Amino acid sequence: MSPHYSAPQTVGRTWQIFNYTAMALAVLALIALIVVLISKWAGGTPWPGFNWVAMIALPAAFLMMGASVMRAVTIRRRL
Image (cartoon, rainbow, N blue to C red; front, side, top):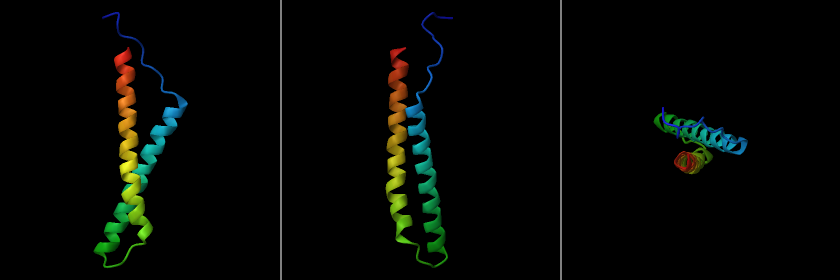
């Protein structure tokens, strides 16, 4: 085994909260999107807030997850 390998780095509490927030936003946006699609298929009109949640939270969660991946890559490159 190469001596360059080290133990996995622990993730800070702030980044854990950041990652869980991104995951919660993604789940919330997907639920809102499913509600909108089901109500449209049923012939109803969904509350406009569901559209806004789906349009804003899903891209925000995607960007947050991308930032988390980029942070993990930079930490990994420093090892």
